[in-house]
Length: 281
Image 1 (cartoon, rainbow, N blue to C red):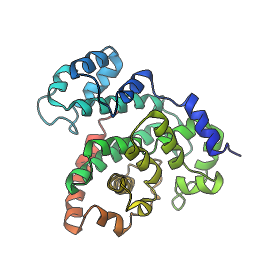
Image 2 (cartoon, helix red, strand yellow):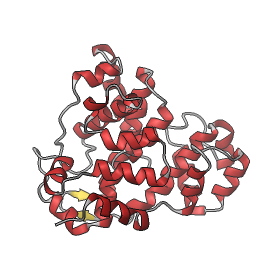
Image 3 (cartoon, helix red, strand yellow):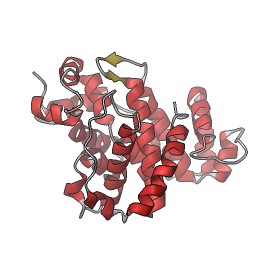
Image 4 (cartoon, helix red, strand yellow):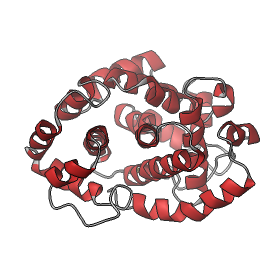
């Protein structure tokens, strides 16, 4: 019924790519490699991109003080790699447009879920002292890119999968049964093609299988996103309109030293993070 995973990955190499601007940022080397002034001038050359990026820079996730009037003003406060990373996510937004609905699935809902997971995973990282919150934000934003790619590259196959997703059958489980592979594997391969870091690739690959990666060098990022993925789904920000994810195991929480007290604090911060993520549209 469907292409093999290797065929889908090859399709993605040609038909599911980032715009040249994002590729240039990534090729600079972990979002670095150019001066801040050069970065700002280059980003401002794209009016639509710069307007969206400035709006995001002024969201509560990145600015709790006086609003920035220009990207140049934002650059003087934000760290260079933070602005560049956020620009790559802004470029990625284009892959979710225009909105499209397939049964339970909507591109806009998947985008909202992705931004929510990014914000909550970053919050978990900061609160638990686990990993790099900025990098984990990007990993959370990209964790379900394989779902977006599946819909773009194999719409008939994707429709067959979504038709069988329900409250007891999550997307990745249906994919594995029908296709023999899932969006996690596809997402990992796409992020590798894009040149993103191994941490970000690993999160895409293992965010539904965090228990298998507790000894991995990428475990903190994977666990932050796995927990955030579950919390967002339970809070009405699922990737599709069905909350069907099992909770992470105790071992996943323990890997981040999250005890009952810290979990209570995370719960208190959750909805503020979700509200802030809602501005990244």
